[in-house]
Amino acid sequence: MFCNVDSADVRLDSASPLADPAGCGQIGALGVGCGVTATLVERFMAGRVSDGVRVVWQVAEGARTAEVWLERSESTSGQGWMRPSTERSFDNTAVVELDRSAVSEQAYWYRLVALEDNDPTVIGTPILVEAQARLDSRLVEVGPNPGRGPVRIAFALKHAATIEVDVFDLVGRRVASPGRGAWPAGTHEVVWDGRARNGELTPAGMYVVRYAYPGGQDRRGIVRIR
Image (cartoon, rainbow, N blue to C red; front, side, top):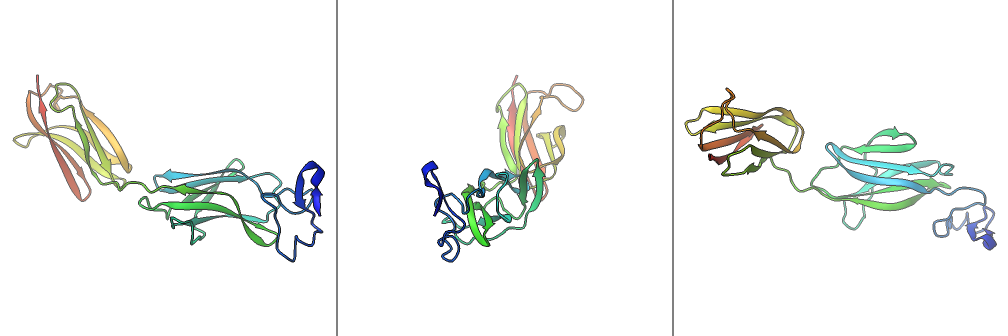
């Protein structure tokens, strides 16, 4: 009892004896009931943001499901699914869910589940969000070293915080402060133009770049040449 085999519509007719008592509600990706639109995923994507994992999903208009929800698994084999607590918003007709409980060091699988004919059914293909490499607060790169022009100072910040990037001479005097204030987590870069705080070019010699962040600091020696 298919809808219309001649036109390749092989959904089960809603009156088919296979549709209800046996629980065989689908053939392949097609739904049950002629003239009824099955729940199809038009959009499903997930990626890391600064405060967790952002998932965007959208189902086809006219879907017959009563409810769609997001599930997450921490297993590499895609087992142990659970519904994470997310912050939900909307982007036009798409649903946006922010999973703040997702930590950067852990990989996660995400999938969509729809309630169809009172039975939970996985729709779409699960998405893997890879773990991020551990981010430590440190100086990443200072250079060119030795050099005579501007100095690029790249630094990593584990959590959003107030930091200081200063340049000192060998007797401990602060020469310049190319980076200060509140910065978000991530890798950033500031440039020291080689000038002292009074605007004059610093003489050739050895200097120390100090990156201070909550709970610690990192230092790197540089050589200025003429």
